[in-house]
Image 1 (cartoon, rainbow, N blue to C red):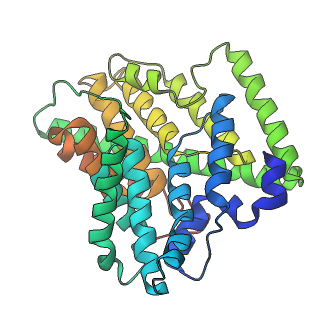
Image 2 (cartoon, helix red, strand yellow):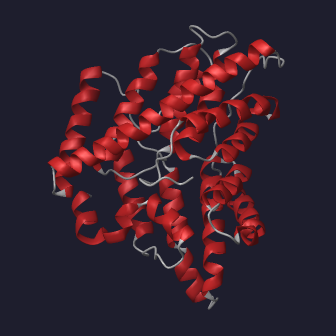
Length: 339
């Protein structure tokens, strides 16, 4: 897989960073090969148990289809950004079953574009239609319940503020570790295929030492467990380390589901000290760590309402905004500040 990207990947190797760059600068092309390459490589990565997600694949597949579609329909280039925004909304909304969060995510990613409001209606239609197609195809998404939502009080707000800071620092740690591993691996192992080999070997050694497959793959069973009982902080720690490792050395996949895992398990672990139920803090950690790592707090607030119910929206707004503020200037999608 590393050799294929090294030999034929070219710009496709930049992944979501290239998609976001193309969204800001329409002159930056997204190669057609990105779609099939990222699909195949992500399937291989998941097949062998690496700790990656799937939303990055969905976004890149959708984005790679935009320019050929524009050319086939003989539309002018001015529609490119509009179509790309719609593709991002559809890819994100469909993979998680959260079309409204997908819409807001695409618009937040697009916030440097002066005419982004023109893309609002197409992105809305695409997000809803993409989710409907997945549902009609029989694709199901996890259902998570948050019991005993506390009433708003000064004490509850205080705990939310403390949690938001912790989740923001956790997101920042993930960003810094992933980028640090990528920089070190590039410096020490110049030949890209060998970076994947040695990184994969180290992943195998760590997982074998832990004697558990708890931190491999998407980790959805562990996320579900986090809503039901108090977990150890080790779950969040090892998922963060292993995800940063495999993505840092160049394996393909998404960051978002692992970020959900990291946030939900850390939120569950907080109930060793924090009051209220593990499900409440797992839900808050789910969206807050994602908000801090991707710099899309509004999309995460909407996602909280779609996944966990409108009752959690006010609390999620506080932790997402604070995590976003604490997480720093860089996101997982780019090495350059996006604010």
